[in-house]
Every structure is written in structure tokens, then in C-alpha cells.
Image (cartoon, rainbow, N blue to C red; front, side, top):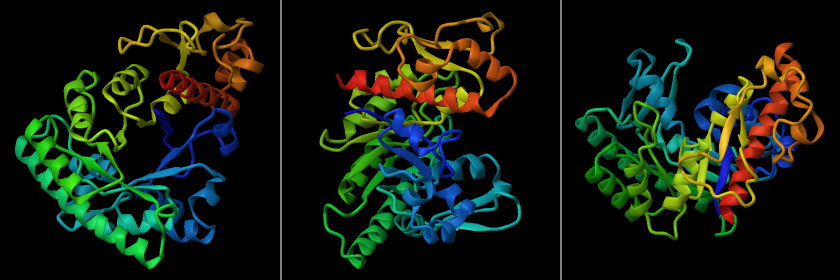
Length: 348
């Protein structure tokens, strides 16, 4: 059952509330412990009763460990912090120091009331050298084992049964090396987790999906375990990954594009249109273009979101031009509904 999770990285899917997400038929969201531990902060999240209470969201919440953020910050700017076998130390603003270890990552995610915890991993880019990829895999396996130990301790302390416990996901690293991906997947399967994720940047230098490696990771994991295509959200890539057997997706792309005036639209009725990885079944629409100034119809005749069922494209053009906050909300709702309609179609 494919599902797309909007990224509410800092505890909010930008520009929309829980009621909007429900109206879009979003089934789960993904948040990020790296950002949440800084703002609003762990004490605040715990004081209000966890992330579900904080965000007014009753459906599942996945919490990313912060591994990708550590990679993007520290690997690309060593002055921002350091990575050791113990964990990551970082100074996002250049002043206050934060330490994120595998154990602490799990403890924080557990205390936030997350439904799916993701192990801290050592993320790399596809072009990183072989020695860096090998080190990443070694460290990712080590951290995953430490995450699992911390997780089991908390489950036991809280006397949680099978139905009550949050689930735990491990991330498979290895860059473009088949051998390293196999080594990482084998070790993580031996440790034992509820789900697995594709780790590392999933696109090549030209922005194309690394299909061979993404497909390999799905093949390495037995079919009874769901695999999350972490960071993959381009509609054509989603279709390709579903064909490989992936079930979970998250990305900031649909919501970020919406806020910047790029909307996803089906070129034909998605209920019966064939969907191919070529992506010829959708296109982009730019409400800010002058040609839409008097467009009386909706953004898309195939969409049932509030933006399309109640407002004209001309009105969205107007909102965009005057830079009103309502544009961001309606555009985000539309793009999220596009993604959930896509998921409904892929489920058959």
C-alpha cells in the first residue's frame, strides 16, 4: 500500500494545519529530530504531551533521526561540527553545541511519541570516495545496533506490548557500491528491524533517479518488510519505485514547489490513466504566469482539493501576485492532494 508522507520537518507541514492534511487524505507525516530538538525543543514537546498533541495530528508520525542533516551540514562544512563513532556534534548557529548519539536519537524520538523511529545513520552522497562509503556503512551498522539496544531498553522499561510499541526503521547505506549495500543490508537484517530505508542521496548529478541502486536495496530486503524510499518524492520516481516494490515515500518537493508557485497537475484522469516512470501523465502549472490572469477554470479538472473545487486559477494567480499567505496554503493543499491521488491510483 504505497503512501506519501509530507515532511513536517520542524513539527509543521509548512502553510497547512492538521485539518488540511486530513482533507488531503494524508495518512502519515514525517518530522525530524535534528530540528525538533532545537526548536521548539524537547522540553516543550514533552510538556505539551508529544508531537501528536503539539501538531494536532492524530495519525502516524515518522521521525527521521537527523542523519541526512548531519551529512548535509557537517560533511559539506567541517566547521559546523564533527562526526565520530560516538555520534555527531554540531553547532547549527555557530554558538550552542548539540550532541546527537544513536542512543540519544532513539530516546528523543521515543519521548516525542513517534510511531516510527528511524535509526541514526551516517549518510553519504553517491560521488563520495569508496573509503568514505565503507566507513559510512561500518558506522551505520554500529549505530543501528546501538539504536536497537536503546530501543529495546525503553520498550522494556515502559512495559510496552507488541501492539503498543513504536516501530523501528534502519537505513541501508553504501553509495553506488553493490558490495557495500549488500554488506549493510545483511548486517541490519541480522540485527532485526521493523522496516528499512534507502539511505544516501537518491539522485545522480543530473537529477535522475539512481534506479539500479534503489532497485538493489529493495531486492536486498525480504518482501515482508516495508522499505522507505527516503527523500524520494518526484511523481515519476515514485511510480518507478512502486514498480520496484517500495511502499513509503517522503519529500519536501511537493510542498516546497507549491509555496514557490509550481503546481502538479494530471494531464488526464488519474483514475484510469496508465502511469509510467516516463512521467508523461502529469505536468507542471505555474499560477503566476500572466496567461492565467483571467483563467475561470480550476487548476485541474481532475482534482477534488479545496483549491480546485472552490477557486479559479485566476484567483490563485491573483493571490500569488499579491503574495498573500492564502496562496501558499491552497497551493500546498493542491500538491499534497495530487500526491495522495497518485498513491490511491498506485494502490489500484
